[in-house]
Image 1 (spheres, rainbow, N blue to C red):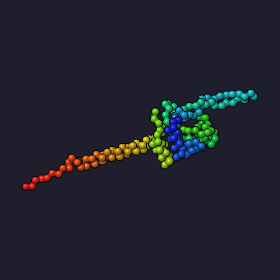
Image 2: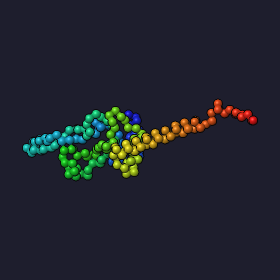
Image 3: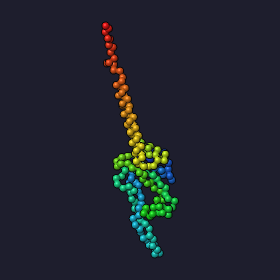
Length: 179
């Protein structure tokens, strides 16, 4: 992880807190978001002849595809394996230490998060906004458009001021002959 991403994650941790000693939100690469998914069952026999059936799991990327930066949210483990299995079945292994899952804030391939998008996300999370990428992007676009309009307005004002300023070459005094 680069120093830039580590700094952004520290800002997220400081501003949004922790859950169970883990940052509530952090930027992660999509290929780091792993679930353990069931691949089958294993039957084993003890020396006394008892058979045990246990599920077998493998790591699977949640998002797949080309790795990209994702804002991930930490979820504490369910209070019990039974509650987890009631909610999720047995297709995913019980995450006894909790896990990070992706929000819908996902950068384009090759793009990295920056301080502006991180600040917008912190604001959205703090003030009860959903972590909907469309809403955040709409706000960022509105902010960029506002900044663009302000810049255009400043340029127009400078042009207008230049046009209305007296031209030293035109400040000649003409005398009109009498008579």
